Image (cartoon, rainbow, N blue to C red; front, side, top):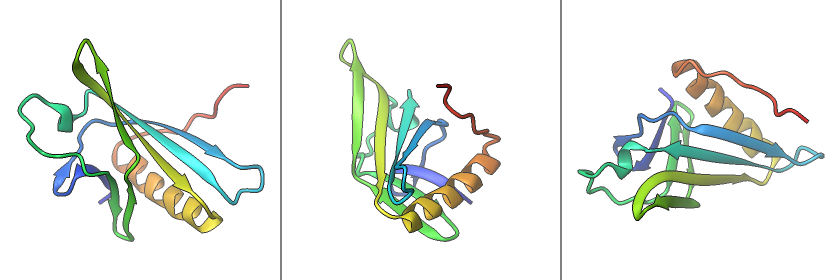
Length: 113
């Protein structure tokens, strides 16, 4: 089962917007995840955000690049950045996203130029 966590053991139920970029050579890329009002930021949540963990049957992808967005002093969104530095990392990430998308009924749309 493909899942996303910000604190180990606590699955994030909010589905993110994901933006991908890839170098022309295909040997690097980035994935930006934007979670609007994620569960981890709920008023009652006492869990620390220790990173973003993308877990599936192959293992775990981890990034520590997680930032919170505040509006009027209240947390409203989380933005996480995952940087892929090789074609293998890109392929692994895409396999995770295919599983995650399938389990959450998500689709892919290409950016308009």
